[in-house]
Amino acid sequence: MPQVVDIAPDNANTHAILRAAAAEIIRLKGERKAVNEEITACRAKVKALGVRQIDFNVAIRLHELAAEDRSESLANLRACFAALDIGQQGDLFPAPPVPDFAGIDLN
Image (cartoon, rainbow, N blue to C red; front, top):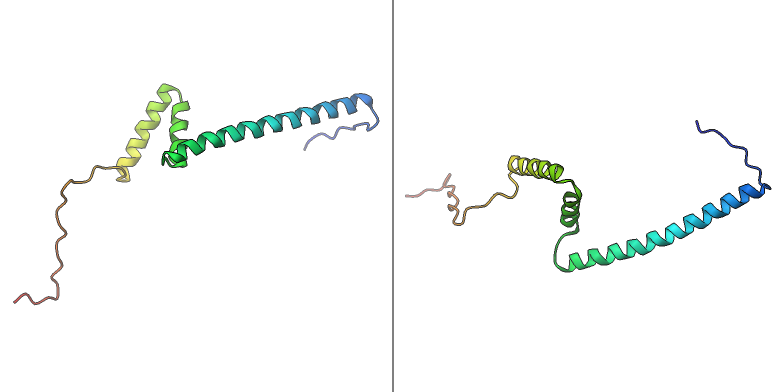
């Protein structure tokens, strides 16, 4: 359970700390808003290329990893793709489906 601290509301030092903290939080929120707007603009450029945001986010996450961790993650993804039959190259000329002649008189 957090410890309750008795704050003297009329203490000049307490007022100074609270005012400074509030000013700092307001300043940081403004910076965060500006950074978020820049990130949104970058994401819009990626979207304009037709790249899905979720795909780009995965690429960024992999890019941010250290080389060894990235190699391990890519190997794990390849294993998952193979197990789930994702991204496999299809046949250029697949065989036509076999017709179902059950119940059809061919004579």
